[in-house]
Length: 239
Image (cartoon, rainbow, N blue to C red; front, top):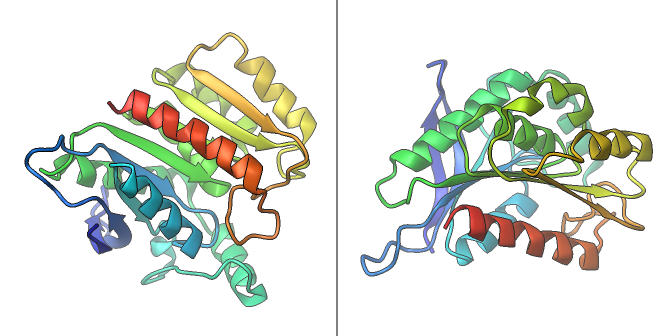
């Protein structure tokens, strides 16, 4: 399948940013693939996110992983997950990150997918940690067909956007996640109890980052279950 880096022009015309793109080869006798934007953790375009992009491409999607730290002067943010130096750099970049501009750059990535003549025009956003929050905000604010967030941090502080949800949204959380503790998950579960668009899944015995292959908190069983649920929603919503 074709893959590599592309340049996406920002919506506010402040410049262009890099994004990893992968898709199955275009074949005229097959339907055009729907598009997915995968949104980063604080490590930028990490090996894990490329792995997930390639997996979803193998399932027939066209996938973009944008570098959302570009506005801090980064030409390309690719930080290995387990390095102490990389972690310190990631938190430094995160502290300066503008959430609203991040959503704008996701919107620009979605526009790139929709304008690509080899895609179907159907789109979704999948995000992890910081990206989980941004996936939630994308599901509230952007015209997409589905939003999926893994252990999104800070969603409970952005519930003023919830009435804008009009398409399926799935949120995955870990039982032992100190960044999204039990009381926060309870707030979210109570808040969305009567919302037919939002489904919430909790994974017992797991911690923050349980879906990240190669990470210290990786839980193979929980990752496989959550990814199966995500793929099912994507296939249903983007058909």
